Length: 325
Ligand SMILES: NC(=O)c1ccc[n+]([C@@H]2O[C@H](COP(=O)([O-])OP(=O)(O)OC[C@H]3O[C@@H](n4cnc5c(N)ncnc54)[C@H](OP(=O)(O)O)[C@@H]3O)[C@@H](O)[C@H]2O)c1
Image (cartoon, rainbow, N blue to C red):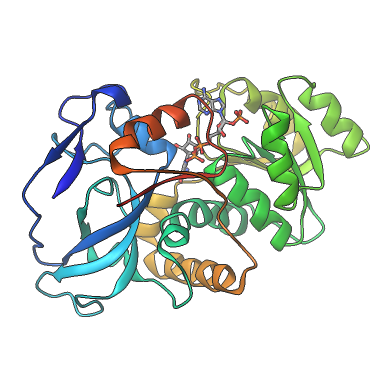
């Protein structure tokens, strides 16, 4: 079977496409014939050895995929060959066949296609956990989403709207913001050309926002925290901007606000039942058409390095998906 391989850590152009033997499932594992694999920012970090999970070399990147079960290992009872599934983990999706953990492999609901399935779990799973379990977002509250046209950002926009919040989407280009509007944002801020704090002040009549969803970090984190309302919650989701910001803690005191960490992968391990319930809610909403992952571009397996480069260069809106021929 063909697989994109990371044989030495580096940029996407160091990845190679090779023929390798099919994987064999061990106890508790499943092999799926991959139909689609969507990319997530951590995939761009894993290949550079910059992520907290470090698969041993060589490995196929690609944390999230959908496909058809080919073979199950000992002890796997909830899946059988032929089942349509979606799955997440640290790596392995950019291959025609993926070895994956049965505990994170879930039957694909009837009516959900493979591309949608491959684009659903990571972004909506992270953002729902963040907004519901970590921020306790309430109807009528104001939610600011930074990097709002990215994978998890756009999911936060859509979920924020679904949960009854007024969503302010902030992103780097007007083209990205158009999509945020389509997904339910009431207000838009182009943080390349506009002053983030001033615009938030104007939009909230000086009150500030109740919740900030921040997958970007870097220079946007501090102005976003300074834009929180009294008792606001700032969600630490990621640092796609590059720098991990250092925040003066007096801001938390002055605003009576909470700085709240979000780590969906660990939540899924430590609180599997709650995560399972969240994913069930998400799958239901996707099947009902109340949520819909925004897939802006499809790539072939051999184009996967280009897809990762596009993500690193901020060209992806919503999800980029590699579809197997
Ligand atoms: N905590 C968790 O459990 C969890 C789970 C999943 C992902 N994450 C993290 O969330 C972040 C976003 O992940 P994602 O998969 O949604 O990524 P993505 O689709 O690439 O979105 C990231 C967004 O960040 C913005 N950005 C600003 N500076 C950037 C830069 N130098 N390079 C790339 N993007 C930049 C871009 O928006 P603009 O161009 O509009 O600025 C981009 O749309 C990552 O840091 C990831 O590790 C965390």
